[in-house]
Amino acid sequence: MKEAFGKYLQDDLEYFHGISYDDENLQLLFSSLNDYRFLIIRNFFLVKSDLLNFQAGLLD
Image (cartoon, rainbow, N blue to C red):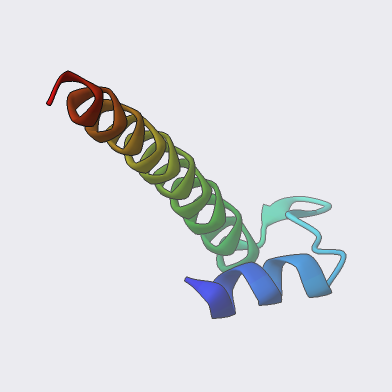
C-alpha cells in the first residue's frame, strides 16, 4: 500500500493517450483510491473505539 501511494504521488500520471487509456496508470489510481478509503474508514473506527473505551471507563 505504501509503495503504491509513493508511486502515485511521485509522478504526474497520464491516464489517457489520445485514443487509448493507460491501464497501468488507471489501475494505480483506482488502487490508491481504494487504499485511501480503507485507511480513512480504519482511522474512523479506531478513533471511535478509543472514545467508546474511554466512555466505558467513566462508567466503572
